[in-house]
Image 1 (cartoon, rainbow, N blue to C red):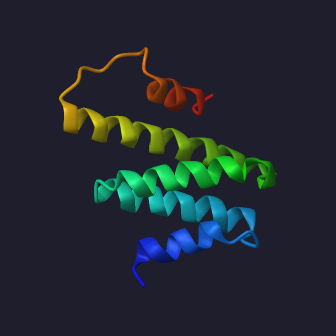
Image 2 (image 1 turned 180 degrees about the horizontal axis):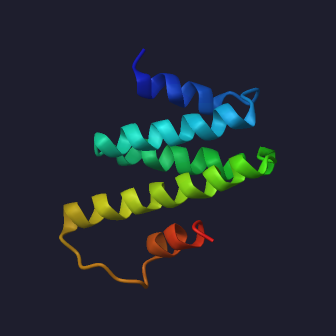
Length: 102
């Protein structure tokens, strides 16, 4: 089993505690970004979003929003690298990136 698979397994487990959930999502986002793996970044965003209500500790909430912002930024960077688009504020992905930095 690859590290990516193991992290996805942790994020799929509804019994995973909130700290492990957030830390594993961050690790998966970092690993996926290094490998230009947009599907794993999107998977992390989806799992974090579905589990937001389970995150109660303030330090985990801060990391939650930080990792979401990083994930949206990575998606945007990978999209631009593939399409050679210019950077624009009026893109949903940039809005999501900035929104999670509040």
